[in-house]
Length: 328
Image (cartoon, rainbow, N blue to C red; front, side):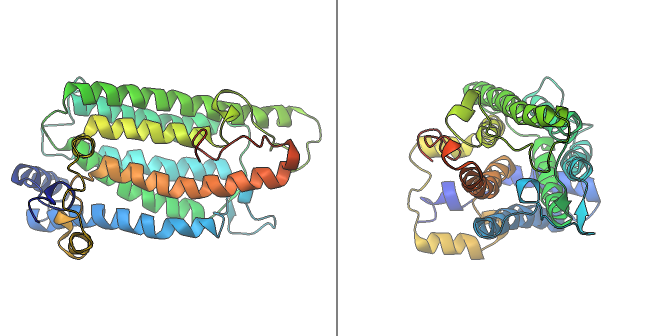
């Protein structure tokens, strides 16, 4: 059973363990054993806690954007400034982990890991600075939102930076090229659809005496023809491509039919209760991030889709799905 479950539930390689131990030792100066446990625990519980908490958003709306509380409060903060601060946390911790790695410095820019590091930073350059600074307005957010996002980004940035900084065998060229192409497509789509939403605010702002909330309108164009949240879909495609390019082992196991070979309830319980290093070892930080994003963002997309239908009634296109064209 242990051998058959290796792809999903077992065995980190000794070389990978040594690599991450060296990385974390260089980063914090603590013992290699303690830091290895810290990395594995962070990867495991970051994924578990995200999956456990995310369903709450099906019942309670995260208080920002269209769901910002209507009554003013000392706990409401500026939407644009809080967004910038909370999103800058991820690249900050990513760069710290990257530059404190076991190598003489960060990976060469022409290497696979160097290209992936640039892709990660380009995403956050747009997400944390370019996009919010070009947005004419953004609703206030409850202070709990940027605090929760900062905690999420601290863990994610640290894990992603540690993973990219660790020297590893390059991904097969076909996976790297295909993954990078998916990343570029998703990134471009995310930017394009965010721009459509920003243009709604710009047009509303240009009108004299715009009433509060009037900047919400039915978006049209590109994938908005099919779904309410194509920006979410494109971001998932972006990080799917990143994960494929960074660590294709999970996809290889899935395509090879070995991912769930020998999987059972007992094996799942063992992985959950056992050492963190044995917890879904193929689910490395890029895959953890992808899964966490989908888990969190789908709940918000579902609630947002219902909000659109409620606000605009029969004027809202009935053929639009939530986030996946023709499916969901």
